[in-house]
Length: 242
Image (tube, rainbow, N blue to C red; front, top):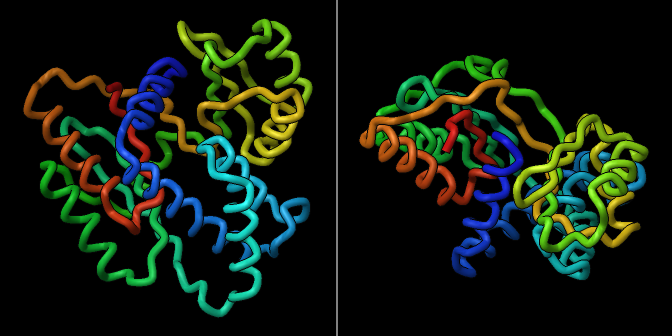
């Protein structure tokens, strides 16, 4: 997806109600707990935690909420029993879909994900069946209206911090990084007090699929809505050119 369509999706999601925002905070809270369990509570020595914190800040999660989540996870490691499972499959017209989950009940999650694919006239596939069509990258989206800095100056800050690519869209800037460099680039932007509409390590499709049939669009939308409403689903990636 281009930076422009990505930004359009961000704006659309942010216009949804507080329940949607609560779901995002719940997702990030789980990610913090798992990251602390795997690598400890210090983001300076835990790349995964530093990445989740950057995502949390981009989603306007308060600093005290982040700190509280880290401390709770560090003091209660035995209760963190979420397992990370990724599902892959196809929607209408061969749209590739990847679903990242964190679950304490694999059977429930697998059933719900399969149901979402089935109700959208799609089907789950085997591990790796579509992930080769995506590149894992850090992606930062900046709203032009929220950024007073000139594009060239912003680009130099990003590239000097280790970004791979910088692009300007109609209403936003997009910065792409290698996953390992993501946290450092976010840190550099924060130091310049640059607001980020979105900041996350994501799966960017190498090519996109256009859907013109109204029923196909209805079905893929149904699948994505069902997946995003599931409490076990952390993130959904696809190559539909919305």
